[in-house]
Amino acid sequence: MSRPRLYVARALPDPVMAEIRARFDLTNAPTPAPPSPHQLLEGLAEADAAICTLTEAITQAVLLKARTLRIVANCAVGYNNIDLDAAKARSIIVTNTPDVLTEATADLTWALLLAAARRIVEGDRLVRSGTWTGWEPTQLLGADVYGKTLGIIGLGRIGQAVVRRAQGFGMRILSVPRRNDQPPPLESVWQQTSLQTLLETSDFVSLHLPLTTDTRHFIGTKELRLMKPSAFLINTSRGPVVDETALVSALQAGQLAGAGFDVYEREPAIHPGLIDNSRVVLLPHLGSATTTTRIRMGMMCVENVTAVLKGQPAPNRVA
Ligand code: GLV
Image (tube, rainbow, N blue to C red; front, side, top):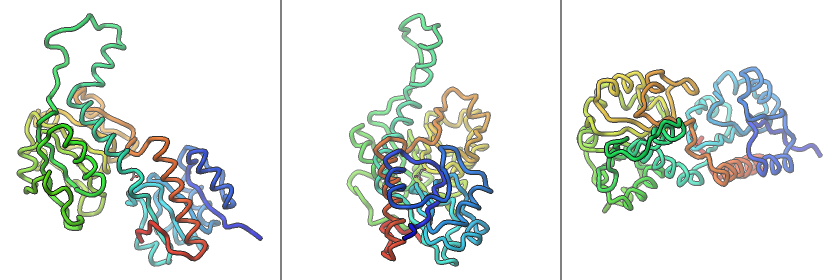
C-alpha cells in the first residue's frame, strides 16, 4: 500500500527525520538550507502533507498549486508565514508548535536581556581581542537588572514565562494585556498599565507579540521616544513588530541605552545601524534553538500530520 507523501521544507533534527522516514514517503530531499521558491512550489504540488518552517512563504499561489495537500504543519509557534485565508479556502489545515518552545524562548529572552544590560558580548570580544590589560574600576559598566522594572508587551505563553523568571530578579512587572489574552495570569505579580506608562517607566521592555497586521511596527518612532534613555528593548517575537529604522535612529539619538534582538524586519538582512552599535546584542533567531525543543517541535509536526492524514482532528490546529 502506498504511504502518504510528505514535503519537508528543511531538514529537522535526526530523530525527527527518522520518524518522518518511518511514517511517510518524502517528495523532496530536505537540507538545512531553505528551498528556492520553485522547489517549494514543486515539492508541495506533489504532497499530501507538508512540514514547513517560519522561513517558507506559504502563499495563495503556492497553495493553489498544491492540489492534494491536506495539512501544513508549521514547525514554529508563529504562523505569519502562511496565508491562512487561502488555506481555509482550500480546506487545508494549518498547525503550529505551541507550549514546547515556551521555556526555551523565555530563557533566550533572559539571555539577551542580561547580555545587553551587562555588556556580555562586548566583554567577550575584549577578552578575545588580546588587548585586555586587566580589571579596571570603570570598564564596561552596565545596567542593574535586579529590582528594576520590566515591561512585558504580550502576555501570552512566552510573555508569562518571562514574567516567572523576572520574579527571581525581584523585578516590578508592568504589562499591557492584549485583547485576546487569557484571563489575566499571575495577576499578583504584574500590574496592568497603559502602553505609554509602560514605555515611560520600564527599564527593560520585552516584546512577545505575534506578527499580525495590527502589530506590524507596534514599536516605532513615537513609542521609542517615550522610553527612558537608560532603558533596553528586547525582541524575541517577530522582527517587523519593531520599525528597525526608527530603532536605529532612537539608539543613535540616545533615546534608549541598548537592545537585545533575536529577530529582524527583513531576516536574514540586518540594518547596518544595528550591526554598528556595540550596545545592541544580536542573535540569529535562536529563540527555540535547543536540541530538546527542536526535537519536540518536529515531533509535534509529525503527530499533527499523522492525525490529519488519518482523518483525525489535528492536536495543534490554528486554521
Ligand atoms: C519561532 O520564531 C517560532 O515562531 O517558533
